[in-house]
Image (cartoon, rainbow, N blue to C red; front, side, top):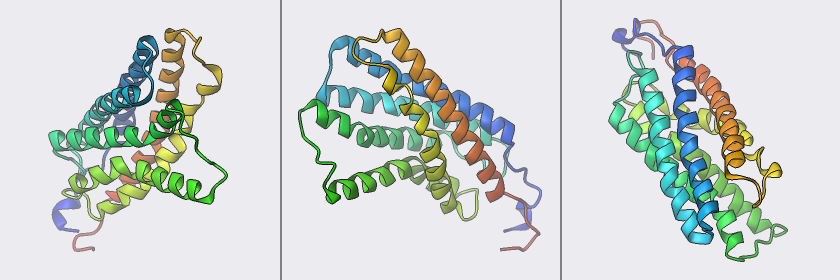
Length: 217
């Protein structure tokens, strides 16, 4: 690491958590709105899938905005436009993968969960889903953070833990649940997910940008 980075400020954990939670919480309301619209309009199958893929880009854009603003002035500062664009595209891809099981079920496609190949495919798809956002952000972060590849496994672990909260409302809703209740339950899940991911990635990012002695590798 060069001497010029010794005095650079590491990202503030409080700022990172606050802005990331704000961005992801607001962003998660975009696909939640998509779910509500799909229910109101009676969309199923590929039309519902396409709607959520588009809404997912909106979630990614707001998440990316919060993150990039949190990094301003720190040693991990990133170009805001590039970061938002990469995050938006990656989030859209993540939603396109995540919505496939539900979409196939709506189309009447039977998935044999007893077959080993099904679990291999599902596991591989899950890993790709978890890696989409940090994988897209990595080249942007590499311009300011050494060994930025560590951002990928850090985020995969964080999202794997955080995403559990997005499934919590599912047992409590069905087609008869009022749209407002669905919206509220998923909104709460989104806030819990965002907070969990923000704390884990914030701590990891601070470790990644920890100042070292001049001339250190």
